[in-house]
Image (cartoon, rainbow, N blue to C red; front, side, top):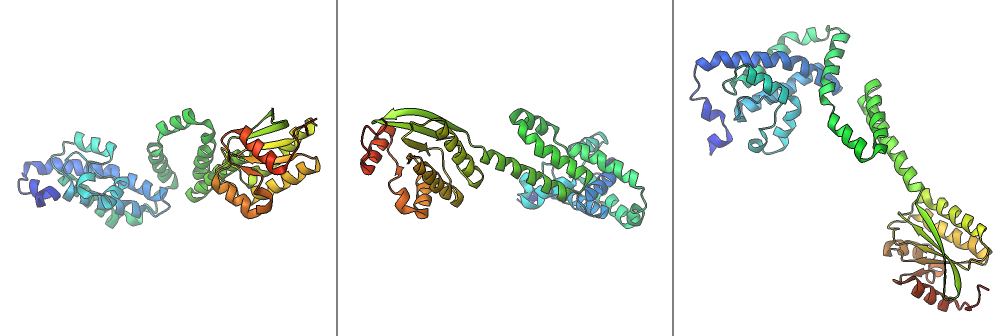
Length: 334
């Protein structure tokens, strides 16, 4: 059981001296690749370059003890999987590029990871001061090279095929991160995405149909999404514009089947719609609104909405019941 959890106990007692040269060559080769790569990751994380080296050392040491596949070498981005998830199950995740380099170097055991860790430690001990004298252009080339492999190009294609509108916050975030800082880039992406959501919420899909039921000329208004403060005035303006084009409407029915949420501004706006329609001798009926939305309206003005809200399955039944409660004559349309 112990050997299963600690694979180093399985291969270390059987380790042969002939393996040493191969493991050293593989470890040094990977280290020469890992040092500039770790510096780049440290800079990309807005930390010092030495932090990238520290993170790489821990990953290599952990895999030397817990790893069971000799060709795999752990990169800094893989260390999180070791720390947060089950050690034994997650140790098959490694850096693909460096693992291929490790394999081509003739590695024999995971001792090569320990050699890489030693090389990284030596670089920290001997080269830390020299890192600060590396030309900015050299570090920039390392950072750019690292960034090219960090971009998920396949995901960009998926975003473009799925919904092209999502490309806007993606490009804005990428450009802001490239020319400014990572924190600002994330904030820019969040801000643009919020603006897009507000725009979509403020432009509900409204449609109207004129029908006649139980002697009343009705304008049936349908909405394809929930209502919020950003779309409240849009609904009101749309209804009043349609009413202004016709003079024979007796009743406006708003179908709230797709309205799953409404805030205080929406509730106040329904009051304003009712008042505007009343000045033109037109009544308002709210049909099939969700229970939570109806409760919001009733808490706003119970005496107004108690007879205005109808939950009948059929529109004709809702209009007939509403007409009975309001005692409207059947020939009012004429």
